[in-house]
Length: 246
Image 1 (cartoon, rainbow, N blue to C red):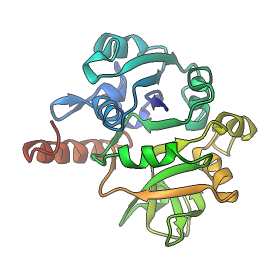
Image 2: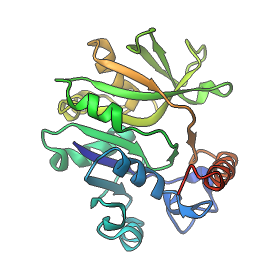
Image 3: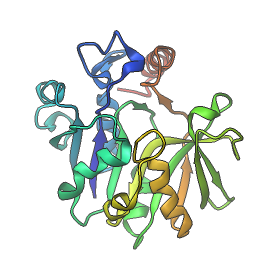
Image 4: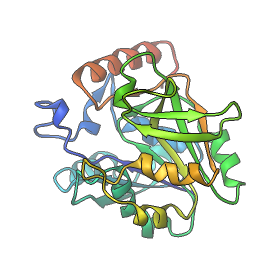
């Protein structure tokens, strides 16, 4: 299985912090934000990872991360010329890298400490399908993709930024896909935002009955606002002091 970390985008919501650097290079207590998805990949048993970024910042990542040896990874880089095309659009950069292998995709601003290894190993044994990771959210559900699932973990539907959410489970930026994912992305049409939406991609798997969801104990999308960035820093500080992060 190959890994993909998406670290592009314009991060306009975090300006002026992102005026001269990529949001995924901002500090998360005592480490750059990008360290967290990289360590999640290594912990999950992934050995080769492609990191996508915008043209302005690709060199910054290479200077910091180099070959990936410090994470026990072999790291590759790809430039995303269209930073506003959506998550699914950015994933297309990995088509030649992944070839016919399954992939683990993590958004670079996702902060969590869930061990993905068991789920990855189980997914490797399946002939096809996809897995997403959700988290229960008490407020602001309308800003997420909301997951409707049954008791066995099979996903029924995902609705992006719904007016009337069907559950309290938000879709996080962690995904597992089979080798068909790039063909499915090629079938997508841009949303009203002009993006290839990852929720539309995931709903293809949901409609064929091969999409399942695992719940995280906690998760923060640190790149959405200054408040969430601050909250993530405080939580990482607490968990680092408690020995949960090293």
